[in-house]
Image (cartoon, rainbow, N blue to C red):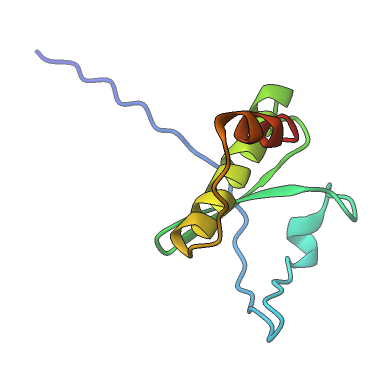
Length: 100
């Protein structure tokens, strides 16, 4: 006689449909905003056709610092790719890097 055990994970989710405005704004329906405050920061992650919103409050400080660094790096890479960069000496580069 064989006995199999199955584990079922139930995750409660609320789902809603919304639209993007002509200004690129997205309205989060009221029932999904409960517990959020005006001006609260959200992390947005886009992967192909999927967009994830994550509350920043509660994420550790190191993660926030790493995220900010990654965003600055991505911004600078785009500027470089578009030819918007300056040549600097190593000393000048390090001085500029200190501003980050």
